[in-house]
Length: 171
Image 1 (tube, one colour):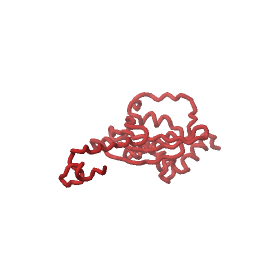
Image 2 (cartoon, one colour):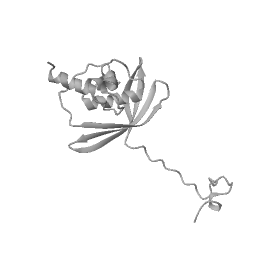
Image 3 (cartoon, helix red, strand yellow):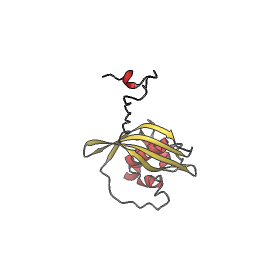
Image 4 (cartoon, helix red, strand yellow):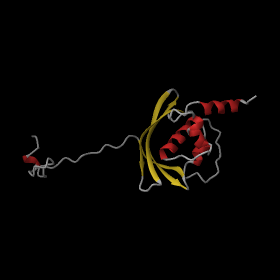
C-alpha cells in the first residue's frame, strides 16, 4: 500500500501542469523539477519556476535561482499562505547574447481568498547548458512612454518643411 505522501505525489504528477501548458505535470515541468531534463529556453524555466511555487518544490526554486544555485538548500519548514493559480506569459525575448533572455509575465495567486497579480519582467542566463533565473528587471506594468510635444518653432512632424506653428499646430 502506498503512503499518503506517495499518493499525493502520484496525483500531482498525473494532473495538468500548473504552468498552463495543458500537458500532464510529469511530462511538462515535473521533468524539469526532477532533473530528467533541462528547460529548453528561459520561458520554459519560468513556467517550471511558477509550477514549483504552485506545488511547493522550493528546492527547485533554490537550484534554478543563480545567486543560490551553488549553495546547499535548507528547508524553512514554513507553509506558504499563497496559492498560485495561473501564469500568463506576455513576452519572451533573447538578450544581448544567445545565453541571455527576458520573460515578461503575470503570475496570479490567492491570498486569504483575494486574487493578487505579480507582474514582472525577469532576466535569465544559460550556464553550462542550463537556464537560471537571475533577477527581476521590472515589476508592474511597462512604464508609460511620454512623447515630447514639438515646440512652436520646431519643424512640423508631418514632413511639410514648415514650422509647427504654421502647419499642424491647432490653436
